[in-house]
Length: 111
Image 1 (cartoon, rainbow, N blue to C red):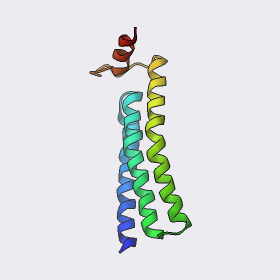
Image 2: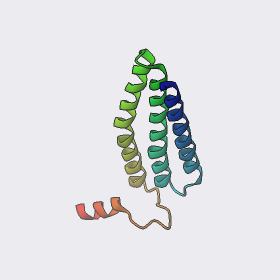
Image 3: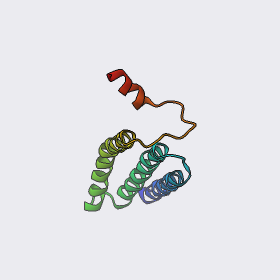
Image 4: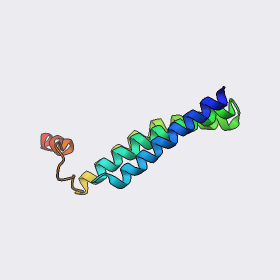
């Protein structure tokens, strides 16, 4: 049973990763691409790792998979925020149809 459930999680994770990669190719600017990379790929990778854990059980590989999930969940949002903030501060333009520039609004409030 856990083998089948693990395989289902792995397949779902692969689908998330494929959609995240498509988002990296198809989305118009760095900020939208960052959204695809952080949301889809993180969920996909965590799902693959959880499927691996379900498949191998409480072995060394299973524990490493769980630790990698925790690491990804803790570090990905911080890294995405740092990349987006750095891109905005260096002057990378938003897509021309973007509606809100929250960083610019926050910087205007500081001055």
